[in-house]
Length: 564
View 1 (cartoon, rainbow, N blue to C red):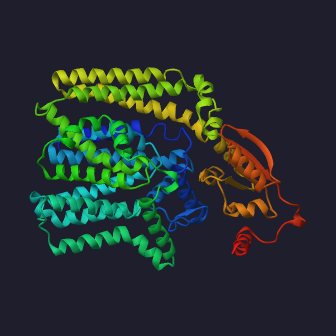
View 2: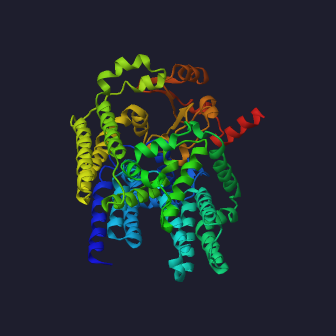
View 3: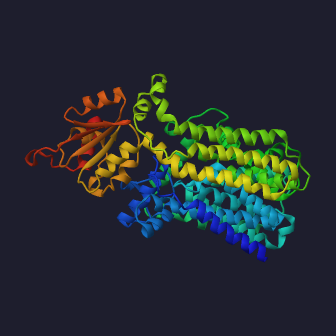
């Protein structure tokens, strides 16, 4: 490795640590995904069972364990808290930028590698994801490396290393599968199919390479599933597969969206990479094997999750890899005078920056205008949440102005001379804005969404009681009450009607229909208080001589039998 490349690697590590680690413990985990994975990791530590993924001490069949293992190890080192839950993604963020720089340096030189890492690192959504506790940064890196090493396998210039590249592709595909599931292999197969069609089905491969590929894939990606089946947990695999199918067929968990949902989020959320990548996405046929694979993988993933009915922002987050690659490819050609930095791109960069800056400013002014807005909001839960009060520092709107000014300065300078030094303006504006959002805006947004419920759960820590959200799905009460196995009863029918041995707290959204429904379903529940979005009730235990002798699970079985 050249000395200049070594210093860039060191710089990436230092800057990655500087921007990805601070603030990750400054705000509570968000329902559902962040708390979901963190709770599974907490239960691993509590039960000592590192093999079975659990939620509420019952098998959790939606996700394999790799990322949850990483979170559990982080919690073992830093304690059960938000910092530990998000730390694995901060680490994978640094690793991702190192991977992009070094692959880019190998394929296109040091300048290209640096541009690729820069485009990925300063774009808004990739930056935010590395400061989150969701599973996708690990999952996406595994898929990307699987595709990259397979692209190396198909490269005529890499023939001497074909078996190694096949094995590495299978290894990272297996790790992606054991992170989130077989959708990783589906994405890989679709990309490979499109590549084969474009290559007119000309693939020079050896059967022994195929054998190595599937052997490594089975060991890396299938070992946990095989172990599940061998240990008598085949039902977990069946539920897992059914869940994956349901995501494709239905708007799971209410996550629907319009047809162009992912197009919009990628264009506005992965700026500036999305804007720079436009000539590569819609331009003429471009040379280069990796370039072709990146373009294919971008369109395959984007079209696939446009078809999928469940719409969640991170479903298309793999596109950040090819999008930033294509952006770096285009920027390098702009710097060499082979591509034009168009007026549309300059205007788009400035307009998107202005929109993000105005959004931040609007959030800081929300408290002043929320009373005027409330009559026009139809959702009673949203209106109740608006009763929360924020505590802004006061300088946040200035950060939005700085973002706009830095973007304008970049556009003027880069249009004039095409020099790399202009990216200092763009990077500074975007990173300052991203850090301000994480450190200042996200904690305030959390106050309007879940803070009152989470505060209530935290107050229950150490209390021998049941806690049950009524009529809405949540994982927050598991993690933030530090739920213990003896308090894991989650059956609403039993909790509302059985003779209790300990208090049961009910949390209901502040929606009149839900509140009245709870009063009807649990007539002996005592109302405690309401606070910004939620109402809280408690049902007290019966005197000891009147308590039911059956534990929750036995009583629940009796309820189910009566229903039948």
